[in-house]
Image 1: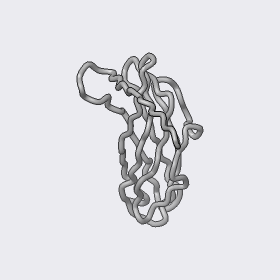
Image 2: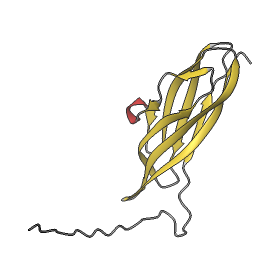
Image 3: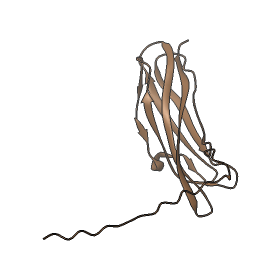
Image 4: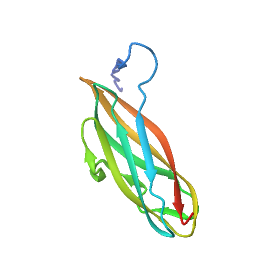
Length: 133
């Protein structure tokens, strides 16, 4: 005869605000226009709200134009060029195979803490990749 034990877990959601509105994630991505096909430099950034800190973050490329190939699909926390409490930044490159422009889309994910309360957030960002336009 089998005996089963039940474990009951109570989950308490901690909000940074008194209202039911979620904490907004401040994230952005930009790419410098290139003179022609080749490597295009891009930057991504996430910023913590006031009185908060970023303790973990990454960037995942979710869509690229047909003429653009990302050199990495995921920028890990260890790839960050800057990782301060207030903001994390990544510098990365994509390759424009032909002249043209199109929209590069990424998802920025972060764990933001205020005191001992932490929340996992994400935000989709986009920018135009331009080569010879």
